[in-house]
Image (cartoon, rainbow, N blue to C red):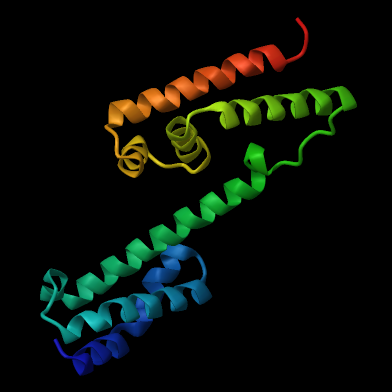
Length: 172
């Protein structure tokens, strides 16, 4: 199918496509944007070998419009949910008392001291995995060790941090 045939198909069925998209979106303005987006998505495909959907290009165009409308609807519902129910880490933190600030500072110092005292491989492993978000496979590759060894390094470091936090916490 050539680009001219695509344009002719779009021009001939534009009103019906917009009506269909409007029934999915509930808005004629969104429907027009959706139809144009769908056409722009399939038009570059016509320059290469025809895609399987081009056996019936009009049906393919309707399917692309339906999928784009669903994607738009899902995106809108996620955005509304985030506005209605903000994620806890985005909510403002409660004001802490001076005692809580002091305890937090002691805990941060305890973690920093443990990290400074760890062997380089263990410190790098725990920093990559916990602070950098790297997988154990990536940690192992960076350190030149096996994955089980990387796991042992991270686990051992976390145990030392937990023990230090146990001793630096509030009195029980």
